[in-house]
Amino acid sequence: MFEWRPAGSAINFGDRLATVVAERVLALHGRSLDEETARDATLFTVGSVMHFAKTGDTVWGSGVNGKIPADRHAFDALDIRAVRGPLTAAFLSERGLDVPAVYGDPALLLPTLFPDRFKRHSALPVLFVPNLHDLTLAPTLGLPFVSPLRGWNAVVEQIVGSDLVLASSLHGVVIAEAFGIPARHVRLTETEPPFKYDDYARGTGRSGIDSANSVAEALEMGGAPPISFDPQALLATFPHDLWE
Image (cartoon, helix red, strand yellow):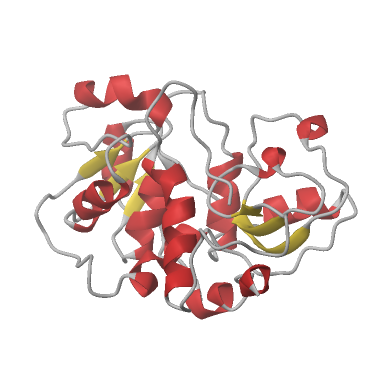
């Protein structure tokens, strides 16, 4: 199971969700990530982590990172069950890989996997969720914000208690929209290319990402159109066979 951790830093809540989601899906079927298995493949789930995959690895809902050159993707064959969106699918298809038309970031499954734990409520009118690279800017924006370095559950609790979520963090947007909370991507800097946001938006039934370039613009725009997503379709492709 692959979980990306930056060297010398706490893990970003979005990256932590890779393990959280896989552990929960397996637990609901009486299995655990810690089990010894016959296959030696690594499972890739949440995140823009395709460039870490090796030939023979399994992909369930991962995406391409728009900052990474194409030649950094050093695999010849992958066991692909689902990908984050059609832009990732096109990238992989162009490399001769078979990619099923099953889209969705696995973090979208949180309401399905934890139906009684996180309840939407109205505690804040607006919450900002920064990308890790924008964290130092968050205190200057004049909005309540939650650090992406907090525990995944704490970040989710903050999101579900908000009426509108503005985020430069992709998973700030993903989690909000999964719970039916209006959300808008805000591009504060040029650090993160639009690829992963666009890939996610197209994978959830939109024509692409419509980002705001400032908090003021985001407040004026409000939330993006709601997602179109079938959690059961994504769950049905989870690679349980890796544990058989």
